[in-house]
Length: 337
Image 1 (tube, rainbow, N blue to C red):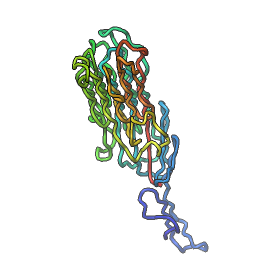
Image 2: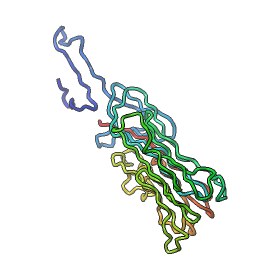
Image 3: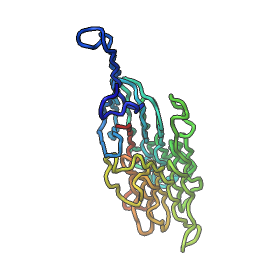
Image 4: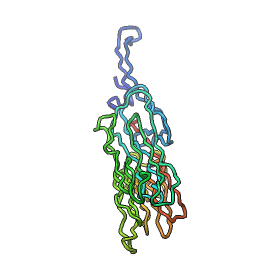
């Protein structure tokens, strides 16, 4: 028997009340069966009126997504923290956080741990091109062991201008992307992974962009109008757009600068490289920080929190000789209501 006003054919969230009539004076059999209803708690919730409920986890720590009643299908976006600044004279922009898009997964009843990866920390770089160069990769984010990998920064101790570290998306200076090959605990058809390499070429006059979830970082660009020997920093790779998780739907509000995602739905942008006369902004869409530009001294930027953006790179001399932090990641779960 259908319930007025209820779509009993909805396979995602239904409460089917089956009654066997007859058998006693009440007209109800003692074996009446009530199927459980999917309910979930955890994070900050939003119901933006598009037919879905969103659970948003933003603080870089551990929490739980709690499912009660019955298993139910979800969609999720898991974004790791972006890499921190790659160091003074570093190889380029930091890599954006890796991204996992869970397109359809029937999540069982129980407590499912959620970890939001922090952006790579602010570090104090040394002033020597050949020094150890402090660095900090982004933290991993996860939902029930489905894991997005933090963005790359710099391999400490490498010679001047040489090596960006691997990560969800790799840092400028040859950092490779590790997210696409990551093994996950759910069947492959139910998720897609995003991460790209950082730009490869870096020299003493310009540096490469960090990789983004939606595209690779670029090598330093030809100098214009100044000579090729003083190139502009390579732009960071753009993040991946996810219209179903657009910022206004999940409570992120306006993201500044606006140019870092004109459609308000990119995640995991790579940081821009440093260089002469950069074309600003050169951070990737989705929270990638701009790289340091000189001689006008436009300063390097941090990655944007909640988007997993990689930090921009910088080089001496700079009025602000500190590495910038990568952007914190985010975990978002949504389901039909």
